[in-house]
Length: 515
Picture (spheres, rainbow, N blue to C red):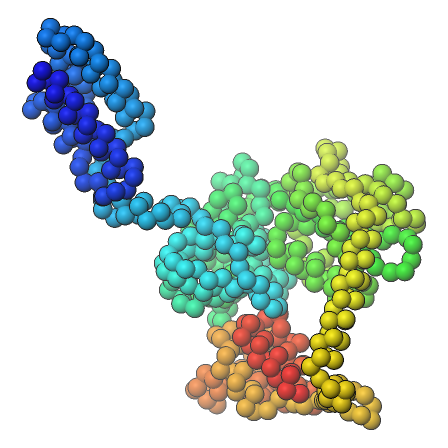
């Protein structure tokens, strides 16, 4: 009976450990080896304890066979349950127990999905509440932070940095401008790439192109995966992944459609065949936006069914009769090109039709979509209705808040009555200094790229003064002087809007409201 009592006690201990470790009532600090020592004094392992169980069961049969059978069944059930659920782990630290008990959202190396706030001019704003690894649901960027942080970032165009990416290096994915409120908090960034690695991964060298104030630098990557390239943050300025390889490169591709908006009954489309790269796609959107024609984007699944390969030829075909120019293309990654190539599709009469992109070598379908009249007619109707609502709301708001005379005066404010054009007011020294104080370390790049100053101008400015804010002010003053009467807030806004921080954009917009 002593042995039976002993096993019952052991069974209770096992159950107690199970409850403690899986309900987080208290930190577990009892190891399995200590629990097993309750069996016999000489048992030091789980296997020896199991042998002791068998011996005890045999001894108990002579005194109380029925009780022994019941207890044996209970013990076996408990042991099987323990083994099945693997409830015998090594001792955990108090920190690990607290980690589980506090129900932390993500485990080690697990990424938490976060959606950023969209700011003006294509900027994203992300507030991270604690240490961890976070992935942006819009851009695919992955951030590693050591504590709470605020991160701002935007997608840039590779075409601005085409001179720095020369063979054997090629673009691997989108380029970003990232900043953080605390430089040391953001330790690493993982950039999405648009490559299909397949069997050629071992032949590829991954790096990042880092556009510093001192010039471009190819910096080593920490690691890479089938989707991302990881980089340890050294400073904040434009950064994007690049690769070097001797093998043919395959890309995850995308086909993007735009329709010309006009009064003609015929249909005209632009079809862009691109890498699935945010920088490339943003360039396409910008090119369409600045075209002399008006376009609407046709919402069709863009992702290619098969990888695109540099140098291979592709043909776009239509099931309905259509003029397609050019009929065939040789695919190249056009990320570095300012002008993005496209295929024009023209139909004399509006009708439903299907477009297919075919790889000539294999004759396989790479991408396919059916276009229906509702794809663009409903879009136009919704757009017109939205415009009408906006105009009505603006009129209602204006009429409710302003008298007729005030409304009339507001419309005339800042306008020259004689010729009807808006008066031009050049920026003041005080306004230039306000902007100068908000500019970052990339002010020299902005001066050369956006304000058309030369390096000798920068060197002359730096030779005059030692204070950095004065350097920035003199740079802006040099620009204003060169622009003469056109040194206005509007002109500066147009020059900087895609290149500076959201804070500077807000300041310029404030200046515009004052004019």
